[in-house]
Length: 73
Image (cartoon, rainbow, N blue to C red; front, side):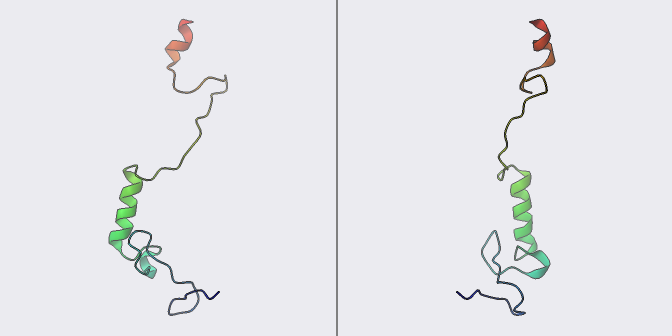
């Protein structure tokens, strides 16, 4: 199988992660500042999210309860 290469032949031709156009070296892995900014906005607005596991405190309690609730008993 032959990989597509860019004009220098050193790297496989990459596609923009947003629009699919060929990536430009100054904005890699994007094709332009616009696509780079679109991606940043998606991260900052919560469109992209890294799934995580809710951790427990050292006492075995979840972190979602207020400390006052623990003392009322």
